[in-house]
Image (cartoon, rainbow over all chains, first blue to last red; front, side, top):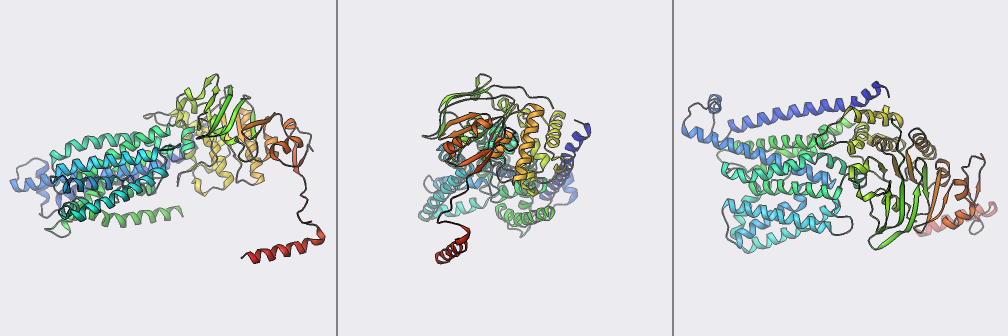
Amino acid sequence: MSPSLAHTAREKPHTQRQRTLAVTAALVVLLALAVVSSIFWGTRDVGVNTVWNYFTHADLPAMTEAVLDQRSVRTLWAGTIGAALALAGAGMQGVTRNPLGDPGILGVNAGAAFAVVVGISLLGINSSTGMAGLAFIGAGITSALVYGLASVGRDGATPVKLALMGAAISAGLGSLTSALILNFSNALDSLRKWQLGSVAGSSMEEFFPGVFLLIAGALIIGLGARSINNFALGDDMATALGENVMLKRFIIFIGITLLSGTATSMCGPIAFLGLMAPHALRALVGPDYRAIIPLSALFGAALLIVADTVGRVIMPPEEIQVGVTMVVIGVPVFIYLVRTKKAVEL
Amino acid sequence: MTACTYRELRIEHVDLGYGTRTIVKDLSLAIPAGKITAIIGPNGCGKSTLLRGISRLLKPSSGEITLDGKNIHTFPGKEFARMVGLLPQSPIAPDGITVADLVSRGRYPYQGVFKRNTAEDDEAVAWALEATNTMGLAERSVSELSGGQRQRVWIAMALAQQTDILLLDEPTTYLDLAHQVDLLDLLSDLNEERGTTMVLVLHELNLAARVAHHLIAMKDGEIACAGKAESVMTSENLHRVFGLKASVHDPEKSGAPVVVPHARVARGGFSKANAGQAMSEADREDNSNE
């Protein structure tokens, strides 16, 4: 074979690589801007000098420093949760070969909400730590149940069975949650607040146990990128390429559950991000999950930070919860990206 | 590209099926190394099931399939995938994937979690594109290709996997006759150049006779007859296996006989004389059904 042929074969990945690099650079800039604006803006205005002094550890009034501390922690939370949800969404879309894949499909959100309501109404739990724990347990049990039921039968947990079981269990848990709320009206307020998703009361202490689980989940999804690429070719082809489809799918499923369960327990269910981020990246850089996965994480982080910042500044002194602003900002961005992709293809 | 290693693929007293339903029963055969074997038979005879068994998509409920004397299920996934490749009946191309990207996915068995594309991978991809005459399509999106081009690209992907044995499940489905011939010629060339052992499931009898060195006719999960095309493709066998009344000719004396199904004795006497009437009757029936 002539060297020029090998060169031609490398040509395409080359242009695609350039595109991926450009998108990566854009996302890094976006994330940096999001972080800076999140620290600048809020219900209390802070000058450029003040932020500079804060980062250079110069002396600041205690009050200002406390505000900036709180904003930094909040930004860290929003970024981490955003990345986690985007990763979970990417994993979910890959494992189910379903472009509408979202951790919500596995019943994670429904399971977490149900556990929280049970905790509030029947067990009298009301602390945020207690609710986070319950949400995590609920999410974990639900996704284990969904996977277990989907695994029954000859083919194991196929994408279609996973999606169906997830939808069925979600619907069932949803009505149980409603039934409990109707009978324990005091649960309604707490649940309503929890269910919108928020990073408002976040603290560094509560950040730590969860973040390890998130890192574990992120590693699983990140290292599973090639396997997810194989799944995309169909189970038969993936097997023919030497992939242990059932085992890898199960491991990646655990990664998704760790990410979405932990994120939901930390901030409540934040909708749409997990669906949107990987989809948007697929439109921008193509179907290779080795690019989609890390870039989704960047995009998800930036987007949730922006959403949280907007929620803080849009009608001071009130704050709008990030779960709401996320969808309000996310939908137009998403529609724009999907439409642009079409324009490029035509 | 380097020549293939001849590997001994044997199927010994194998039962294959789904759940409690056994489709292939106590089947034994040896696949000739370095040759093209075509499996033919009526729908539901178990030919695709047999191919699924050979490619490890289906585990035999009894008996064993061996590669160089070792049960195929004892090989690690990637090691097996470096020796035996499969083109399934309906593979899925991810939305928006380019030809070069798809073909390079065939290199997975040679890569590790942290091992990036090597020059060897690039070379194998370039060779596969060249061999299937798809180099010019490398940058195109797979979704915008014609059926014939797309099938060539899938074969390129299987070639990039550089296996000694290649299994193809009805690779010519959905192609017109010219493209079917074209594709099978491509497989013949590859077999000649590299010595790749190929096993094809084919529906088209004339094409099977044309491409295969070795024919296996299956019926009801068992081998009805096997051997060279001229010994398998006889009108007696066709009647026995397919229930087809046909005459077999070899106009070019090439050893690749041609099957001509017997002219149909028209139901209700479909002759020139009453053709018009029959048509209009059929039309009327259609209308009354609406």
